[in-house]
Length: 258
Picture 1 (cartoon, rainbow, N blue to C red):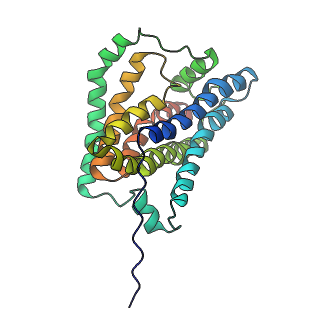
Picture 2 (cartoon, one colour; picture 1 turned 90 degrees about the horizontal axis):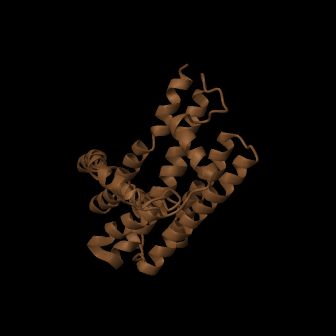
Picture 3 (cartoon, rainbow, N blue to C red; picture 1 turned 45 degrees about the horizontal axis):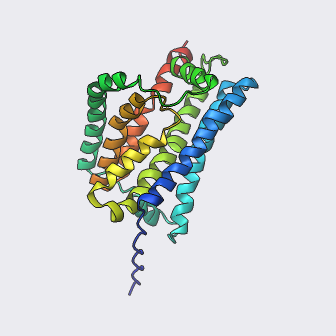
């Protein structure tokens, strides 16, 4: 007879204190990187791609590593079935794909509805970003990597897509929804998604210059967390998150195509 593998041990719940730590520490690292290291690199005239890789990619890569380390510390083996089941990476069902489409549509719709409210609240100032960071961010949103001739640079497009998919989406979603959310559910029950989404919003404190920014981000963070808990699958959030972050690639393409 084939031996039955031992059942996985119940996950240790993460309550408020643990949740604040698991969201707060990555936020502090990102804040130090983007609000401290990035301005320093700008002042010392590092290239825009180097700055992007180090200050954005570095912390995201650390989150991906943290998710895998946390998985291993829980005692799980390095096998795909175990990794898939713990991080909720099962193949999406037809219903999961419907939830994914709904997630993208609802987030866009909520963005339009909440936009005027967020704009009205933008006058409530929270923090002033270093000028180097705000200028760099604006440049990346309007004309990424201005110091590089992007014509024909499909290799750079491929690298940005890879970085978004593996470090940005892999790092955040595997940490927030793969590792953390399943451990919040025993502590917060059906409202775990709300705690997860709210804290994910506040994780972006390095972007939140006003109360309007905090409110504006909720249209993405809450739906992603809700669908992740509702489907018990991390893929819908990963797909929706990836689509939402493709803006930099869309802006790059006209210059790459010449």
